[in-house]
Amino acid sequence: VFSINNSDKSIVIETSSLKTEKLNKDSIGGNHKITVLNYEELSYYIKVNCTAQTVTIYTNDENGNYNIPIKAMICSTGVSTPNSGVYTISNKYEWRYLVGNVYGQYASRITGPILFHSVPYIKKDKSSLEYWEFDKLGTTASLGCVRLQVKDAKWIYDYCKPGTQVEFYNDENPGPLGKPVVMKISNYDEQLKQWDPTDPDVNNPWLNSNINININNNFY
Image 1: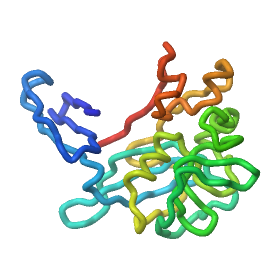
Image 2: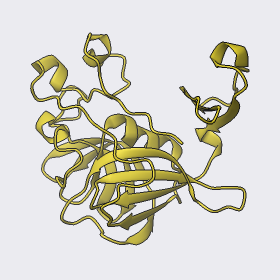
Image 3: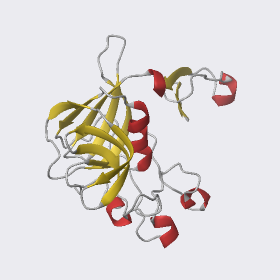
Image 4: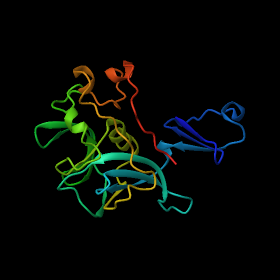
């Protein structure tokens, strides 16, 4: 994925591959500054804003300070979510049984029972999404975990290694990258709304639909 910003002649490339192909500058707008974000090689600091219901991912500068925001995510926290403090990611689970007899995808433990994970599923099946809960993203809706779209939960699961620090805070300002917009899905047909639109699984019916899915890719 890459983004071109013609105002400052910059290109940001997101890649999870250890190989990055050379780009023809003439084919993408001339004399641009190219920045490559190889997620596998970076380290991260995560900030969860419980007021704005956003998660912002930072990476470090040349001095080791985590002050470069690279990704924003919309989330839902809850009554038992920490309002402050810094914690450390530990265990990870592709599927995790949750309170309420439901399941979450791509769970990363933050502290105690508090995890990052997807919106809940009725069963351990990607086509059993609680779509009415998906539509609550961006508001306080969980019991305490940090709910995310699948693409965001998976990103943390894939790239934020055990030991990554997570800070909780409260601010009306959503953060330097703003608050992403998420589509509402409850009014779509049964086949579609029982899947998270952002799930990269090849069986996801959203991928073969003609519906314009608003999936924000926030970086720089």
